[in-house]
Image 1 (cartoon, one colour):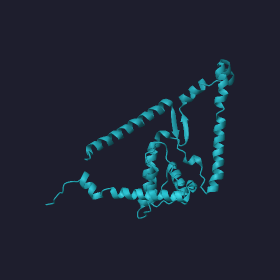
Image 2 (spheres, helix red, strand yellow):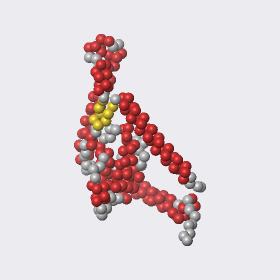
Image 3 (spheres, rainbow, N blue to C red):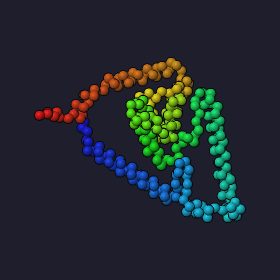
Image 4 (cartoon, rainbow, N blue to C red):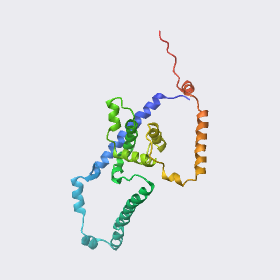
Length: 245
């Protein structure tokens, strides 16, 4: 097995180019819709708002020029706001009661909600890289002091709060980095949770013990079957010895 370095570089350049094309397409679509995101506020350009005002009609005019089907279904469609509001209230009640019962730190949901879905992939990679620097315990230079104390994106603050509270890592749909990757960085840089995931309490002790023993056994067998670092280099990517004159 040989490693084609040039092919890997070509693929990397192609990925960068595709990402640029995707960003440009997202920006073009945003402009076409007339949408602008400022902080957590979604704004619309004046032309879009003017068009909406021109199309808006009163209830009486809507009833007068609509067919029977639209008149019958419109109240049902708009009434969907009621169950959504009830769900929101129920989630708030759940957090207020159950989080206290299990000792989970309560947070304001608005602080940890990602609205800018168009840049979600970028934000996830950004947060993963920032964590490597922010979680440092080094204090031997102003650079590391800044990294350790710098302001964090709200999405990363939410992930850290969840981990530090109950050792949970939430993964967005399609997120590049798995929970295993996040946990490796968090524990590797000594970011310890205050408690354990409450869901583990539902497992019988014997079953949990057998499961952990099985994982330990599989890791051991895998490690024993793998070549050493030196053997891997010698087999796949060794370089000729350069003799100095």
